[in-house]
Image (cartoon, rainbow, N blue to C red):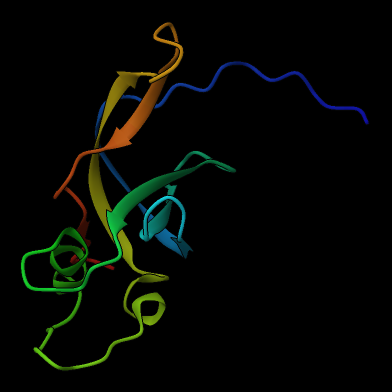
Length: 119
């Protein structure tokens, strides 16, 4: 297989805009919901924002979805329908890798995802 050698991609820290493109669910070692976000102006790159798959008042996932729709106790919602396709703004920070401290990775700041009002 042939592959093109590409330059290192660096995502600048700070505020970005983009779109939620997918929601994935993990079950090992814990139940986790990953929200995939495409950054405006950076083609082919997606950042992942993770939250435990718990939809109770105050949980990280609840707080995220509540920014896009009203949530009522006892109500059932489709998480993909609530998030996919939404235009958002968010903040990133660059942090060293967990295994290789010489590599930096962009991380979405908790609580920074917000709907874009002009979308």
